[in-house]
Image 1: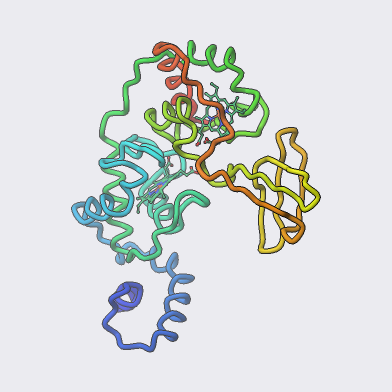
Image 2: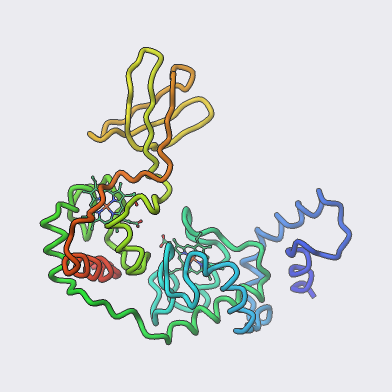
Amino acid sequence: MKTRMTDSLRRPNARVPVPLRHRAFAACALLAAAPIFAQSPHDAVPDVALGKKLFESQCALCHGQGGTGGRGPALNRPKLSKAEDENAIRKVVREGILPEMPGAWQLSVREVASVAAYVKALGSVAVEKLPGDPDRGAAVYRSKGCAACHIAAGVGAGRGPELTLVGARRNAAFLRESIVTPNAFVPDGYLLVDATTVTGKTISGTKAAEDPFTIQIVDSAGRFHSLRKSELRALKRHEGRSGMPAFDTLSTAELDHLVAYLASLREAR
Ligand code: HEC
Ligand code: HEC
């Protein structure tokens, strides 16, 4: 009984004629309570076919059709690092992994269970076979100076994202694109900005934080600047421009090895 109420109230097309304001309140209360409901096994008899349909409409955008990966990690692996069993997958689906994966709060308990069952079933699909050699890729990584901007397994410096577990988060096609055309996708937290003050001084760097009145910028030397917007003459945001240079002159073999090396960075060592 409780479950059915949860389901109908949490769906946007709930037939219960509750005034909108009350409904929003009820939805919030139910959201807070959702994990408790989900723990009861009776709530959630999964339907894998329904899970597949939901996956294709709501998850494939980031995880690829069939879970082959893209902006989000490949999910067609026997063991997922952040979701070890079906219960853990349900939790990830419900709550998301911030900032990049949103929680699917719009799904009912049964829908969450169905998507999780489908994701679990994907694990029996073969993993990607890559042409490169990870050890030779590690040598390319060292010789190209990647460690000047990235930390991998505790080595390097940190202006770019940490790459220690990047193989678990991104598939090979995404990694290849990150190296050759970094502008194609710039994750949250790496927006480049130029702020020009009324006195004519320009500060360039990565936006660290912002509110309606101030902006915080980290420059290329790692210095932190906090500026009042009222004291700025111009604020230019370079959406879609990466702070990483394009490594587009690598040979095909070097690129294959490098991608194989990054793809191998998937377990904490
Ligand atoms: C906007 C893009 C996006 C959408 C939509 C999205 N995800 Fe994700 N997902 C990600 C990213 C990025 C990660 C990796 C996050 C991290 O590790 O920091 C992730 C991680 C995961 C993981 C953990 C993988 C692991 O290796 O442990 C699972 C499971 C997952 N997503 C399932 C789903 C399902 C099921 C849906 C649809 C209901 C979904 N995701 C929708 C981007 C997305
Ligand atoms: C001058 C600093 C700099 C250098 C050198 C550099 N990177 Fe980056 N890298 C960045 C920044 C900043 C980002 C985040 C913006 C983006 O994704 O384009 C990034 C993003 C990435 C990503 C995507 C990570 C993710 O999770 O989205 C990968 C993979 C990567 N770099 C690999 C490399 C490799 C391999 C090398 C050496 C061949 C390298 N980088 C050299 C600064 C650098």
